[in-house]
Image (tube, rainbow, N blue to C red; front, side, top):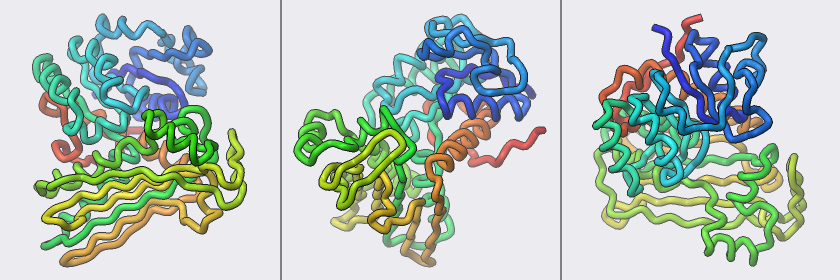
Length: 337
């Protein structure tokens, strides 16, 4: 089967997704982006392919409602409230949705989820969120490991990411480079959020275990540079904010059963933090594991793009509705060519 896909968002990750999908024998039949520098260009040229695709990038996303495809892939925004109006025209056109939006990996804690689910069922399509973190390394894998346990007493997941290669949106979202006072004020105004999926990751793991948590406690802390730190697009002076630490605790009967920590900063190794994703499951039996990488930004993009493309054949055969990885086969790497 040759799946027909529409790409919405052809930035760094979107370009890699499109290139991998074409390599796997899938057909790009539409492409949208708001970046005027690539609007009107052939998709092949935009993604650095050695041949043209014959599909040109458009900035008129509303036209997706006139199109026909198996899946529309949205690599655009992180929040569900922003994604919902983007995907609704495609849903109404009967097109399945895969998105890397952070809040879509476990959407049920957000008010938009019910409306998305109802629309997906009405128009007989599947809506699915996936990626690296969340969508695989920090939630799906640790939940999968618990399937080998008779009992689980505690789950700890920690991810340390080096944001040195990032600019623009990431620096703003994590408040990197701000003074302590400005960072605190930005947090209070909601301008600094850090990692958006921490609560969703804890809830996803609990949902897979059929565990009803009493509450999820979440907090955000600043990471203060003890020495100057230098990224590709910024310099952080000593005493200013080099990143954030997001912590979410899933509590049951007064015990912190599921603990997730996300440390994202410029040059975290300056404080002797190992970059990677780490799991610890205390139970019967217990498990520990990790994926360490010096190039976690590159690793994250590779994992995210693979997760999206490998999910396409699964999503096209799935029941309608808003689904998480709990509802679908985990699948494997698609190797058609």
